[in-house]
Image 1 (cartoon, helix red, strand yellow):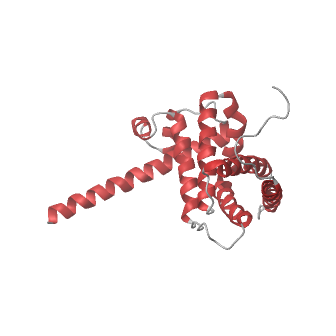
Image 2 (spheres, one colour; image 1 turned 30 degrees about the horizontal axis):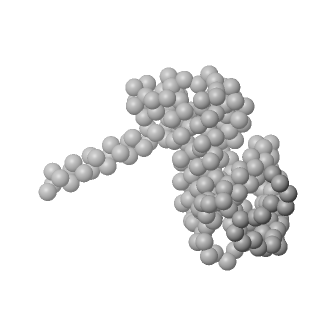
Image 3 (cartoon, one colour; image 1 turned 90 degrees about the vertical axis):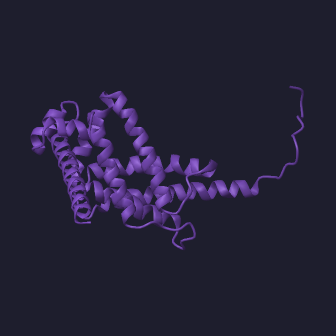
Length: 223
């Protein structure tokens, strides 16, 4: 029994050590990206900055973009850890989305310089830029789910497209936001969400006012 407990403790110690190594590598990568950009970043640089062996870094992150995957997973986890709204939450959808998106900007805020460098450099690295587009899609889908809104079906598709436009608009404002309370970012996000809410309400009104049709329509003139 004592041996089993000892083995378990060693296993937990190794996992904690690995987690610390992952955190050090990610933090070092973000520092280097902020200082010199994405295009010059190497795993060897990350190893030197973090104090890890190159072999350790490569074992954790075989490619550079794996570091970005790990970082954005951390951000997603921080956002979700603050709680998830239920679909029947009484708060307006706009308020819920505002809260969840601001959680994301709060989590990104310590790494604004790195985010600015990534925004500048990734267009010159098409494969990684394509993966980043997929990351944004996953983040937006998670944002809707955390806000208690479904990303499924035609309505969900519209939500994702609208939320993507709002997020990218607010991201641009956030990158230039020098205030301590992020008030310009909040104002931009609020404007975008209110505009989207008005569009969705208008579409819902059009759908309600559309005449009901049964069966196939009969053409009024020859094709």
